[in-house]
Image 1 (cartoon, one colour):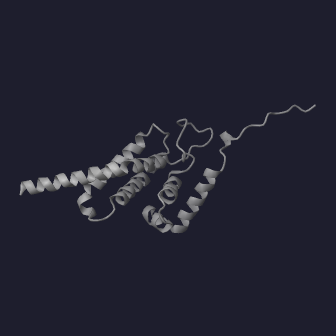
Image 2: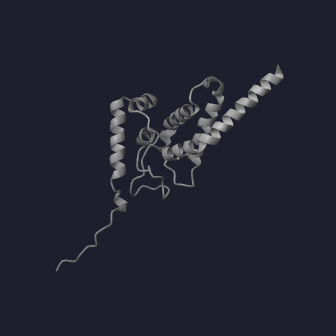
Length: 167
């Protein structure tokens, strides 16, 4: 009986390790986009991913044919949404913060979550709305605003015109 349980546990561990080997890179990239940390310096994203993978491992036996990537992504999004209050304000010109932030650092945490799930992960609007607990119209508005923000040129990037003395 113990041998059978040990074999089952070993198989479970091997399956999970195989999943992590295949999906961890993409999931880490999702976490980095969510946290808007600069490339190469991603402690919050790594903690976020570790928490999501830990929850997936804890539920591994209960997944029963469900997609473990989907489950881990949901855990990642839920954990980020729950902890995003710590990082509620976007990085604005003149506001102190780490230089060289991530590509989405101008967005609010909720906008980042919607943009990453909708545009990077390709999840349907209704599914994102259900995952984050918002109406689909609000998700559409957040995604539109975030996209407009990302397309706009930040004030610090616009070149200043030299002042010309008038005679």
